[in-house]
Structures are given as C-alpha cells and as structure tokens.
Length: 295
Image (tube, rainbow, N blue to C red):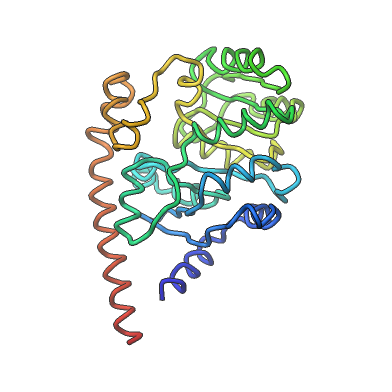
C-alpha cells in the first residue's frame, strides 16, 4: 500500500522528466535514486540525497534533457504556500523539491519516512562553485541586496580564476517576481551562458521568477537561495554546524538578524508546524485505514 500511495503521488504531481532522465543517465554504480516522494500541506517533497545531487551537478549539460528548477523547501515556504494559494502549484511544478530544515525533516519522520539528507541552498551553491572551479563552468548570481551579487561574483572569480562568475541585482522585483527590463535580463543571462543560475529574491519571488523564466533563460539548473549570497559574501553569519544539527538555526538567525527573521520564526511559522502535524495525523490515519481494508 505504501508503494501504491507513493506511485499515486508521483503520478499526481508529474515529476519533471528531465530530472528522471538525468538521474538515470548517471553511472548507476555510484548513484542510487530514491523513488520516494512525500507530500505535506499540498506540497511535494522528493526524498533524494546530497550525493545524488552532487553527481547531477557534475554533468548537468549532458545529463539533463530540459532546464531543472530545484526548490529547497523549508517551513516558511509552506507558510507562504498557505498564504498564497498560487504558490503551491509553482513549487510542485519544479523539477525537484528537496527538504531544507531540521524541523521539516522531523515532520517527515513522523510520516514514517527517512529523508536521506537536509539539502540547503548553501549546499547546492557549494556544489556549483566546486564544479565551476574544476570544469570552468559559469555561475550567474541574480538578486540579493544592492551590490551583494556583484561583490560575491568578484570574490569568487578571484578565488577560482578557472570558473566564470557574474552577479547582478537588477533592481526591484514585485511579489510575483516581475521586474522591469526582464527581457534584457534574460538576454544577459543567455549571453553569459551559465550552467547554474542562483536567484536570491526570497520566497515567493524567486520561485515565481524561476518558474516563469527558466525555459527562456536556457540554464541547465536554477535554484532559489534566499540569504545564501549574504552568507557567502560574509555579510551574514551562519550558525555553527552543531547548532544546525540540533535544529536551533532559527534561534541563531533571530539573534544575528532579528529584523529579518524574528516575525517569520516566532509568529508566522509555528501555526504552519501545527497544521503540518494535523496533516500528518490525517495521512497516517488514511494509511492505517487502507491497510485494514487490504487485510
């Protein structure tokens, strides 16, 4: 029954064929693809490992048949999806939705699942930089506060001269991810011809922009990364590893940037956690009822 439910989820959300073909194309002696797909509060979650993504990031141009949008889902994304009813379809349309955040991993375990890894925007950014430094591929940085993307691109270029890095803020984006001069931005991206596109506009802007523009941009892999540019550029500290593993990173972020994170973690996200717990109880009850019917 468990396998049947997973199959139904896979069919309902029509997992992007590009990621499936990409995973199959990688040497199967080194990569085992998780077939499990979960769902929480109407948003799909693909239970893949960081090792799988590491393999994919090494050869995206040859292994992907179409551009791949990766969403790093956390509790706040679910909060925003409950608030903006059009956001869940955008998230579910991405080629891959991975679990980011210890609380989200704990919730998935309550569903009886064992997600392989927490996968953050920081992890994916590091994979891209590693590949760019080794293979000479390009990384395009879009968004962030004024000057951050440009500064970070310059620092990366100095540190990894064999790679190609370009950064731009490109002005203001509205809540729907629209910006003036968007066609010029797409032309700029295509001219640079990056392998990886990282968009730091915050959710839901970055997910909406990627969903609407990825095909036109023609980039193999695009990821929305929120505050990653600020951390990578040294403007915002990240919690030590032990704090991350203990599930206390949210508290750390409130301490270092209260104006940015306090409302989100203290007021906005707790109701979503309780809603997720109710959803988990509902799913487990349905699963238990189905097992009884099978017997």
